[in-house]
Length: 411
Image (cartoon, rainbow, N blue to C red; front, side, top):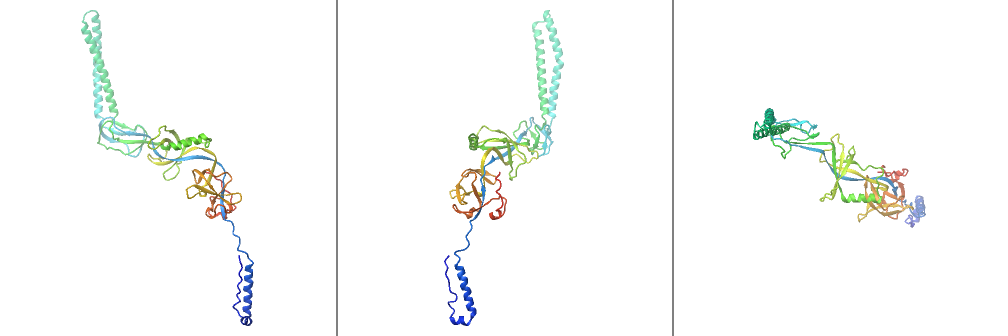
């Protein structure tokens, strides 16, 4: 800083100074003040900007993937009549839970009861005639041996007996059919579950095996979640396991977590039942079917959910808070680190995925690197900085947390 001394008394004449001693004292004060300021070479030295850093430490992380899915009923039964008839009554409340074997509809049973009674009577008539024809066949057989009757007479008696036996069997079959049809007039629940709305009312005429279901029962506990997984993601996971970048040690890949539509986690874990072996040509994906308990009926068929599926374990994972990663004009992820001389350096990164509020870094960082997560806007590569630890829970700036130790980077 250059010093320029300006005489504040140059405008004062000797007469004014002599006549007024106060002016002389004021001039001396200004001179001393100016000379004192000239002795200072510059202002106070500027301090290095303060940044909060996170030291990179490898850690064991369970790698998961979050995939969209849709719920579907564990079992579905569409209720259709098996005989023609008139609906006399509906025995359930729409939207209620029903048990297997409960009565749902009652078809008018009178015609089928009458058909059964008629078949039963036909059987009784045949059974009544059977002893006489059997005895006649035996007598003709003895008489034939003594040539008391001709062969034709015996053959006629034998044929009549056999015909009656056939009629008896036909009558019994007709009776069974009539009984079966009669038993179909009460329409009962084939499974336990929740029944929906009824598509017919009392007095409606229904036909056997009609295309329109009378009602539908769905078993909701447990419930299925069908999750499509792309073949690209499936091959990538297989390559990671093959290369040793992931392993299955210590985790159960059959356990799946669920996130509901509003973002809340589902309280119970599901079990991966199977992975389909056929790829959908329209989407290039395979279906993973997961079974979840649903005792409270929270999950309903057709809901969109997100399934968190465990892929494996990465033993030496590097996680960095997302606020410490930025993008350059090309859109590439970069991070600013502080080297051993407390100077800022820029690193190009390769990111794998987001895990919570952190990025999983595939390359670009090594253990021991100090990544700047607060104060990035105040520094540039090559600048000297003052380093303080980072605490994710603080509300003040880095200067207020000098005594706080680095928080553990856990997911």
